[in-house]
Image (cartoon, rainbow, N blue to C red):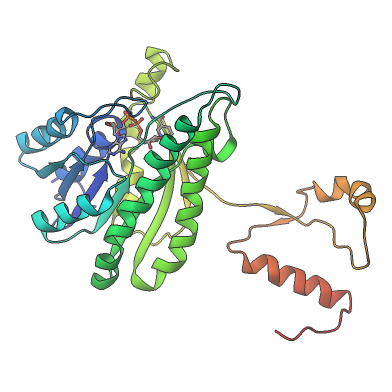
Length: 306
Ligand SMILES: NC(=O)c1ccc[n+]([C@@H]2O[C@H](COP(=O)([O-])OP(=O)(O)OC[C@H]3O[C@@H](n4cnc5c(N)ncnc54)[C@H](O)[C@@H]3O)[C@@H](O)[C@H]2O)c1
């Protein structure tokens, strides 16, 4: 018995599960009773070529220990093929881990349109396509857990990664909006931003650091978020080397100009506008609108018709 959080009779689809973090997830889900669809295109780090090898090797490892899995070799851009294969094979889909991805790092001077498009397709489009293809199924069964994969490079920016950062930040935008659609159907969608040892990080870190950041340290958060006990929705977590934390938006008190104002007025209040001394933690765009309405009311603006 692998532990308290079990996935018996659950079907999980994991993109990019032939190597790196995705493979670590697949092995653990299988140990905990899930039926695993191991999707992997088997491409290079930059998204070239294809091979059945990575998906087959994960499936073989799962089967060796008595687990249930089958491979799928489509690019996760074609989510319809992956979800159809999952439904044909296992009859349901409960969990999606959108994990596949590649790198085409280049500074703005050197980046090509192809580098840009490939990274958007392999991260953002794959996340949309697999999720969209399973959405009605999850809605109808009134159950789903979806975990999307962002990155610190997306959340904070990183030199030479404008394509990757844009896609990875876009993925969390996708999570935040879809979480609002999924709520009433008991579909929870969350994002993780991991740092773990894989071919993606093997040239960045030393051997010692890579050992400290082993992929299996990302697995527990994934398992927790994928379980039926998870009540978080639209949230963002960072995890690496055994450290796990949640992130949220923080907004300063700002400055409200109740009369006509100019760029010079903004400049004059720049310190106040940039201050986080008093702040709140907005959860949706409506809270911006509500805040402005309150500020107007306090400044005795005529009450608007809504
Ligand atoms: N490793 C890290 O520290 C780190 C940090 C931040 C984010 N991430 C993200 O985590 C995810 C997993 O990264 P990793 O480090 O395990 O990478 P990895 O390169 O080791 O594994 C990625 C796997 O995805 C597969 N893949 C790529 N494009 C695909 C596609 N279109 N369809 C199907 N399979 C495809 C590859 O063949 C590969 O097996 C990625 O989204 C990555 O951007 C990783």
